[in-house]
Image (cartoon, rainbow, N blue to C red):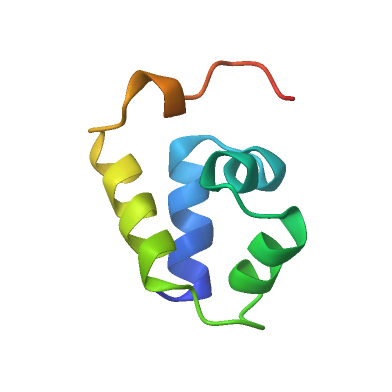
Length: 68
């Protein structure tokens, strides 16, 4: 997954960088490294994003409409 694909998926899902990082269980700083291309997107993160974008997301991971 390229940084542009990651960003597009995040926007498609309607998440902020902070919220998506929290859902993924990584720091915002690490997420920014992925999105800016400083670090390759890890395979597990790419798989999770793919599942989320497919719409087959467990209720606990769905956007609640509130930022934390």
